Image 1 (spheres, rainbow, N blue to C red):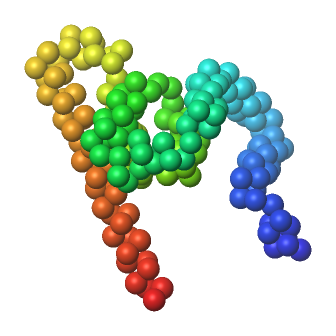
Image 2 (image 1 turned 45 degrees about the vertical axis):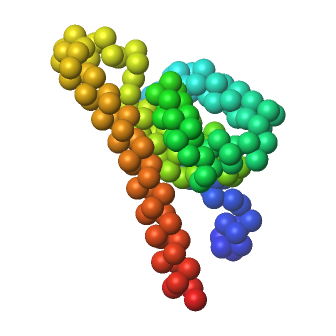
Length: 178
């Protein structure tokens, strides 16, 4: 019976149902803890709403103005140096919690964005422009320049490695199937 129900409900909804069930169980055991947990969730949700709106606005923009061919040209496997530069600079300029960018990246991946460029975007998010003055203050200008350069460089190296590893994985998986 449960098997048939779980087949009809997608994994996303199963997760939501699981979380609600956990909240209910915790509420039965310790209502104050469940209440505090719910209040923390609401506080966090209010905090991430601006970033969520930004990400969905960008998703709308990409869906409305960019077609699959253009995304493939700018961020596909054959994007070249321009694609890497766009991915890394976009990662540096992005703000908010990283998990808020996952829906946009998933949408771009469906349209042809290369895995390596997504990895470079995510890696380069560690470069935070608003924190540069504090980094310079505590560690000095030479350290800040070298660290930023290496983070920029290794975001590209990380992206290339992700592409190569996924290509190897795909090749290995296809050989096992054959």
